[in-house]
Length: 461
Image (tube, rainbow, N blue to C red; front, side, top):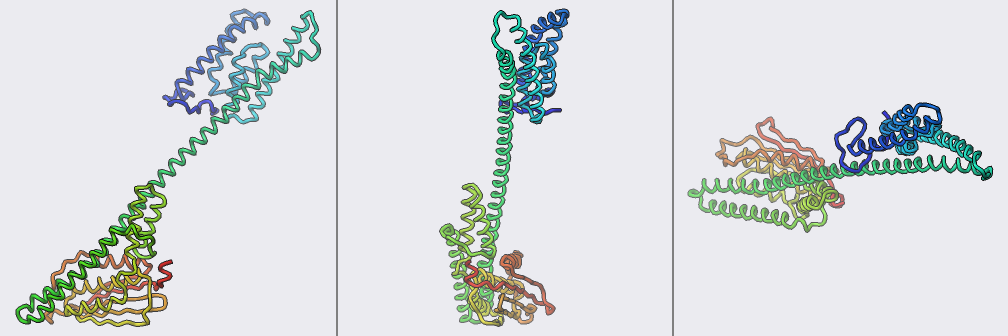
């Protein structure tokens, strides 16, 4: 089937396709043109029958059949033009020839075929017109000159051939341009839809990452302080009647722990409320990954999604600020655990130096959560905290022995949500480090982590 540009018109709403027509309007137009062409050819068939000495009904029937061919111009434009060329010597089918050439030029038929058929139609029309004008001049009483006959033949043949071909070429090119623009618009719409979906996914990811980070920070801050408070409260209950001075000391420690927990919670909530005022975030860690994703969302997403991404980025940036916990605070952390009666040994290897804030904060949180787990699950066990400063990394290890049940240490009954080890692993792997945890052969538990030693300047770059 030859595909023509005529049945790719964009105006109107397409109806149910019938045969090769895409719309009812196209059917009505072609049937109307076919009927008009058949009527014209039928009338011209009378003169053809008289010239050819044929019966008039035969000429009329022949003209009707020839004119009706115009109905199939969209499906077979080449056939319509060939019929027009074949009937040119009979001087039948003026409308057939003009509309057929227009349809052929506007179709997707190769240009060389259009040029060949249009040239043939031009030559046939020129010959027929030349003969008719020559016969008219021969019977006239005046001589118009030798130039009159060829000039009239050229003008008539060009007038019947050139305008429909040129107009058809213009309409075909315009239709193809409109189709190309429509396809491009559809493609752009699909791309925008994909970008919007991707931005929504990134915004959702950033929100989820931020919720995870907040939950991890809340767990680290609250779990350790509250664990120490519960241990001190248990000790206070045990010695309240036997040793009032020690009870007073434990009560003061509980108060200090509670105030520290409230202070850290206020600081965290303040960071979340004022996070939008933070201008830049350091890369690294879960907070930095959320900041990167949020920045991408803010760059690509619409305004509502960009606001969400910007808020997440600000909160992530504030979480990695320089005033967070650092490696220097580990000694204080160990001292707080010692105050509960836990035997903790701290050993530091290598020369301490400045690291990026996210590295120091992650190292502190790993040690903090490991000590919290000891308070929860290994009351009375001996604990060893090792910290090693190496050339390209900083390593930490918290190892406890088996719980000393015989020593009178009682389980404080602290609940466990099972998120401590998961949070530590997420923090360490987010910085490109290595995290290992598991029981020891002696019945204790060991937590080890190695973090890349990113300097302060590198971390801020």
